[in-house]
Each structure stands twice: as C-alpha cells, then as structure tokens.
Amino acid sequence: MKFETVHTCIRVADLEASVKFYTEALGYVETRRMDKPEDQFTLVFLSDGISQHQLELTYNYDHGPYDIGNGFSHVAMVTDDLEAAHGRHRSLGYQVTEMYSVRGGKPNIYFVTDPDGYDVEIIQR
Image 1 (cartoon, rainbow, N blue to C red):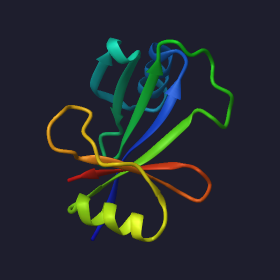
Image 2: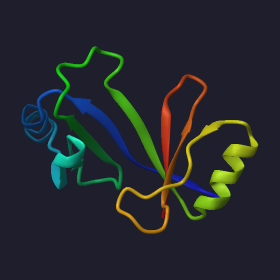
Image 3: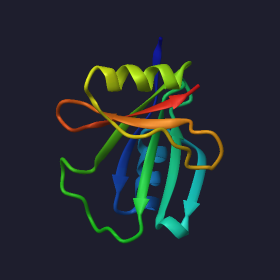
C-alpha cells in the first residue's frame, strides 16, 4: 500500500488575514472554501500551484488566538485501500478512529495518531 501527503491543516484566528498573508506574501492561490456554520467552522484550501499538496486553513468561529504549538491540526495522506490501511494501523496497535465520511455516504477517511499525539488523516484515493 502506498501513501501520499495531500494537505496540511493549521488553525487560524483571523481567516481573512491568514488568506491574505498566504496569497499575498507567499503566492498561494485559494482553490476552494467550505463554510459549515452548523459546525461552527470554515475551511479554506490554498495551493502553491506547483505541487498537489495543499494548505488547509481552518477557522473555528468560537476560538480566539491560538498559542504557538497547539494551532497545528494534522497532515493528510491518501491511500488506494482505506480498509486495508485501517486494519493495518489497528493491528500495529496505533490509536485509530473509526472510518467515516464528513459528506455522508460510504466512509472515506479516518485518523491515526502518531506517538507524539499528532493526528494523520488517511483518505481513500
């Protein structure tokens, strides 16, 4: 089984200031935005226009500034066989969530936690 990094997520306190910084200062381009008022968050995906990897900015409505060190959320990777990957991570004894879908339908993601407590999102290709 193969894995590929697809996006990195960071939480931000001021979404528009962050979008402005990454687009203006670093040349990123906004590729999509998902506003979920019922869940109290907005996601903005940014691309460097070169690689497939994207930066995900997460704005949680009810959160103020983040302390340096706790604003990092997760790295995401894709796999061609989600069920096999899920089973392998469980069999190796890692902390693994159940597979699920944020959009409804067939489960297509889960998270596995590394030894330091950082989450890695595994997504069905």
